[in-house]
Length: 308
Image 1 (cartoon, rainbow, N blue to C red):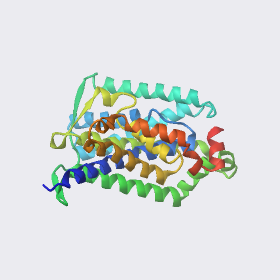
Image 2 (tube, helix red, strand yellow; image 1 turned 135 degrees about the vertical axis):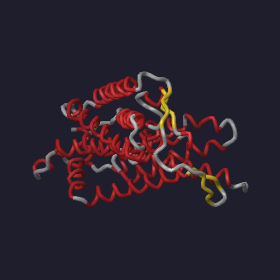
Image 3 (cartoon, rainbow, N blue to C red; image 1 turned 180 degrees about the horizontal axis):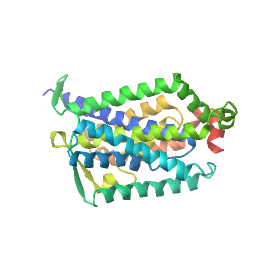
Image 4 (tube, rainbow, N blue to C red; image 1 turned 90 degrees about the vertical axis):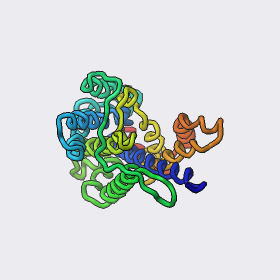
């Protein structure tokens, strides 16, 4: 193995991780732009699909089919959360919305733990082909590369759909000016519900791409920490969302790659810098909050709509 291989391997893994973080963050931004909810339940809603996948595989359902069948569980969870909890909340009271979102996250995490009988560890079978590939002298797992390609492809497909389709334009209209959208005949409730459904599907897919394949051919392990409300990737996903000011979807995707690379490349740094790997996401989030990135991406109409 050449000297450059470790750097290339870590970079490729960081890009794969960043693609999944970006996919999570796109769901966060879509929900926030459309309904004004900073969704701290995003990870817990995605975990519902992972738990469903584990149970379906345990019942003998083939793994690819089980992954496909489990995703609607998260979609249903997100839509129900919006309809019965967030739809009637005042968006101007951000503290109340955040506290309720944390409560909803705890509810879904508890339901997931209950479904798994509160086991400390639950095995997750892989559903993507697992192999070690060589790329430019570096070793990379097929699941990392496939996850990155799927995440990037879906992200760009989603961005194109969001900009060009009639439904995407309606969602943008609701995000930019809810009152004007209603006057134009756009059903705000219907499209807000759709935004929650799509955002929840993105969360489910992101977690199904990463968690079952963490251990290579051995599959993944769902731990108590993964079932917790904030999980392992929600904080970096929030950071990626902040990179786009919580409104700019393309920059959010770029932010996902930046956070993924920052976390993984620190593995190669000498001490004490390598020890910052676990806290780099929080450090970058503080920097982004101080920079107030929403000023660069959000229109005045969108900022007013999110406060309404």
